[in-house]
Length: 165
Image 1 (tube, one colour):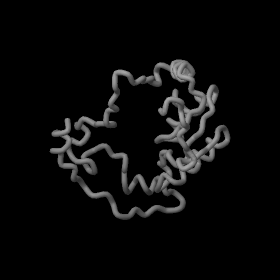
Image 2: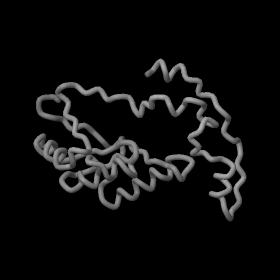
Image 3: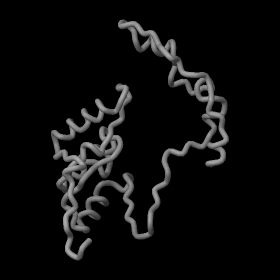
Image 4: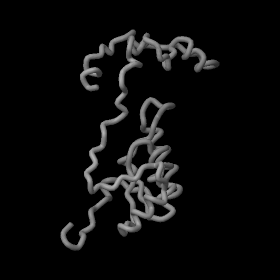
């Protein structure tokens, strides 16, 4: 797959450098001038959509690692964490507005049974309506603050554990 992705010519028609939109119908004007969701060859090049799409690099899992998938549901995660004696959860990640909020390991589930602290400066939200993730992340973290504690990386300190671990 790597060889195929590396050998593909990703060049296509350049994106427009400017788009004029009116205050009355900006969405219509935008899509008339630039169908940005066009899945044709104009912007992605011929054959682009036939490439294998690596969504992410695989996470390496050791035999002793525990992996709980969303499909297994929250009770499997909750029971495992409780069996390990976990009482507090530091939560961070990408898609604060979705994944960190609502998945099996999201704060809406975890906060039912654990003290959850969202590490605000170690999260990022999706930002389709904004030019940067800053606004969406701030909104997601502020919304989360209604239901749980927000912390930041500099406030997190490891606790000494008996046995030097």
